[in-house]
Length: 305
Image (cartoon, rainbow, N blue to C red; front, side, top):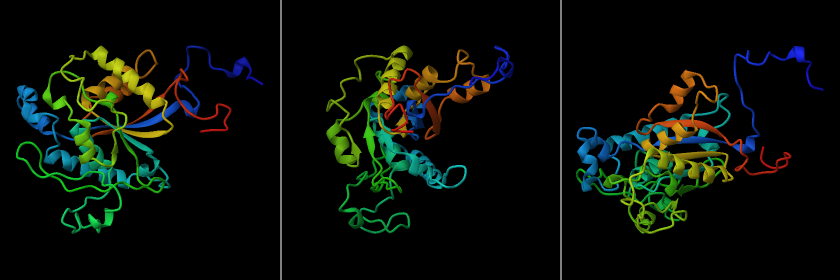
């Protein structure tokens, strides 16, 4: 039976506000901004550099790859509060923007071991090309090109206790702001498929980039795209998803769906939510879909929890 009215706090005098929703209408997103790219390195010194064709579909710079290594080490150590479960074991899928710096960040931080192309172990591991020859490499590696890319060894797929391999899926909806900067123009999907054979590009509908140069997205336009992305995410079966994206798009998501006065969120929570993301920063977020438009499973409790 419902509690007596005397047991209820007087309306408007609650000290905290809470919101309960069925778990199947929530998801945990691990939002990750890409590591530092060459466009960041030069663009922060001279903003005009962002307009340079030199940084077309910009690669990570050496610092960016080191940031990925640091995030990877963190993820491999991170566990639940009781130490019973690895954070990596919780992640069911990696969704990534189809731009070079995001793809490199995804495989660099969430992919498997580095592999030496000459067959010798890389980074003091026993992983070689021969040992993964029967699998699909996550990333085939690259040579060095001064001022464009630093070069990097191949990367093997990531296997967790629950997934072998951990699936990676490219999604155009979470790409960077669509405008006129060459760093935000993507390559053809055939090139990406050859370079990142462990990433699924089936969601990318066109070979060439048919969006770049056709518009200069406003914040409102980007927030509308964020809505489409969130609808797509919420209809997926996975509960814990890593999303490797870009600062402007991530900021649009946080601005559009993050903590607000209207939701009764304290200023501290709003500032924590909306702070501009740093390179290779991971920000875990819980998404609630009160509309019920997403989520899978039996609403009576026979399906997903």
